[in-house]
Amino acid sequence: MAGGAREVLTLQLGHFAGFVGAHWWNQQDAALGGATDAKQPPGELCPDVLYRTGRTLHGQETYTPRLILMDLKGSLSSLKEEGGLYKDKQLDAAIAWCVRFLYLSSGPPQLTTSTTPKPLIPTEGSIRVWSDFLRVHLHPRSICMIQKYNHDGEAGRLEAFGQGESVLKEPKYQEELEDRLHFYVEECDYLQGFQILCDLHDGFSGVGAKAAEMLQDEYSGRGIITWGLLPGPCHRGEAQRNVYRLLNTAFGLVHPTAHSSLVCPLSLDGSLGLRPEPPVKFPYLHYDATLPFHHSAILATALDTLTAPYRLCASPVSMVQLADMLSFCGKKVVTAGATIPFPLAPGQSLPDSLMQLRGATPWTPLSACGDPSGTRCFAQSVVLRGIGRFTPGTPPSSLHACTTGEEVLAQYLQQQQPRAMSSSHLLLTPRRVVPPYPHLFSSCSPQAVESIPVFGALCSSSSLHRTLEALAGDLTKLDVRRWASFMDAGVEHDDVAELLQELRSLAQCYRDGD
Image 1 (tube, rainbow, N blue to C red):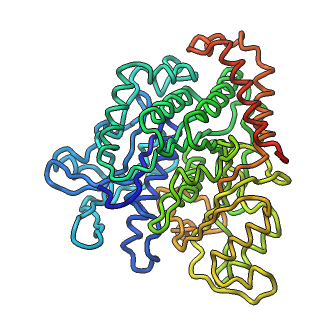
Image 2 (image 1 turned 30 degrees about the vertical axis):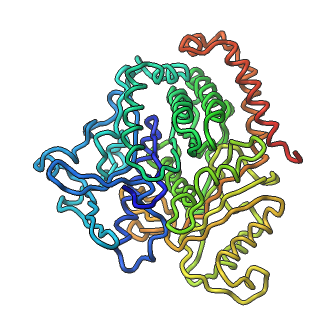
Image 3 (image 1 turned 60 degrees about the horizontal axis):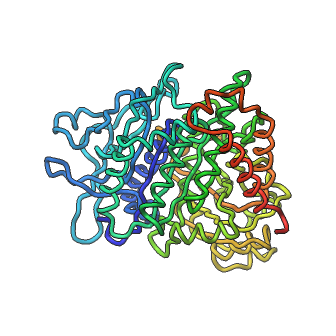
């Protein structure tokens, strides 16, 4: 049991979601290790929100992610579907992973590391699937494989939204998912909700939409936040893949809005539509957008910061409260942005670091909605982490006159978006980026970076009006009769017409001035 934590159950649906999830759980694991470091500030995020305690057959206390993941046949590499943690001791000792166990005692739990040696860090060239660099053990009920579709090869692929929806209509997979949900939910003291990490570009968009519907039907009143993940970039010259990506993305954004508290697309692409746009740029990162290992690491770092409000130890904002604040007037789709890393020079004050941004949008957009400059923010949830202890500066500005870091951040946001409803959180703890996190930091030596400050925001923005209208415009130009294979997977012509209408209705919610 989580001992008073407001638990969250994570669903990872799809192979790119697996990449993002592997980085996400590696970062949680690194934070657990940092919690025992006397040099680190006290933990501000409660790990029990995401993790559960258990016991192996040999009586060993364990601490594993509260996670259900779905992927396709052939996607696990050397990772066993049932995991290795609850097998015999010899097998456990042979697994070259660093496993952290939680030993329960009176008072605060003490985290210790098992005696298994730390693994060799995989080289980027050796990484083919997400399990190649996952460093945490998973519970035997975490992994659910869809055996009827293949991860590799050209045949038997889960390519279309309708195929994905059909998967969770089959009694076998529906019952398997329900059984795993009940296992995790029934051991929770206070379940606040579910976070769904779901691929948007392929048939897993349908799996995610159907999963959100199942969750709303069975766990009404709980928060459901759907993170729609898009790897990049579009494939030039591959018309079918790009059209399928467009259709899956549109269905995968619109359908979950009926069953989710919030829906947020996450991508380093410049656009959701058919017209290719260059990937976004970070001033202090050097990454390859074609590598899922790089792309997913950045998104996982942003996601870890964006979700901090409902994982705080003290005065957390629940998933439902966060969604209510951001999604008023039907605005259930939100955008994400982040500054990775936040440029805070040694000895620099927080007011000085914010003022150096000179009024520009302080974060890089992460929802493929284009440049946010000149758009209106209706509501935002902002987290700045890793800034250390607050030191006020000489007061040449109103920011320098503030007495706490929280006041500085709140006033800065008020100056940037005076008409927006804002919620902000300031955390001392930076984001750990130890291997196998890729070396993306362009100005540092390979050994220089173990943790970074991150500035992240979720925003209900008028940029979504432009983005959703453009998505509808691309769909209108399609002759769906040319893509019979997509339609044969379970989507009717009337479904596409209804999708267009819902997209345009959703876009109208974000018109500036409404």
